[in-house]
Length: 193
Image 1: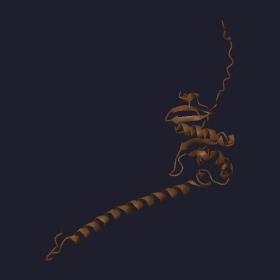
Image 2 (image 1 turned 180 degrees about the vertical axis):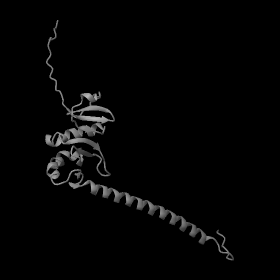
Image 3 (image 1 turned 180 degrees about the horizontal axis):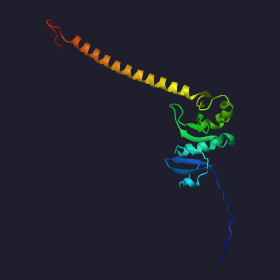
Image 4 (image 1 turned 120 degrees about the vertical axis):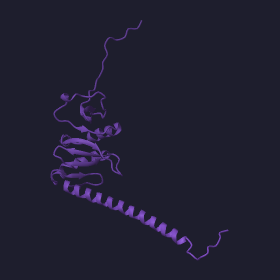
């Protein structure tokens, strides 16, 4: 007969909570290994401050947590929310909203390379500015953002009205060309063979 040992050694690694994936009222812990825990946490059990992640793509959440692992704690502590805001060219672009209202646009794949420059840039910009790290590193204030958004809206409306006018012009020109093909009174048309 063989007797099994009566004691087992088990090593358990407990992962700390990195932040919370938030949907409306529900909070799901995101562990420091990038995994999202399926059971929600009651609001009265949440820490007084925590990182809010508002996108659910599990692969991107894992990449985000991994990239943030290379960023200093002083920068991590300043981030309030993270939203996925992809552009035409950057599918993994996120907007980090800092506790002071500053917004940082940065691709998840570039966080460990670009976000360490945040404090240096932050000293140079006013509160409520946007620091754009998508392609290079730029900053602009909310007033500039509003102006750019208004200009973009006006340009789009202008393009729409031009397309509408072009459509009307092409209808007019097709009507004119149809009229010019019609035989004039007193003229004979040759039969087509």
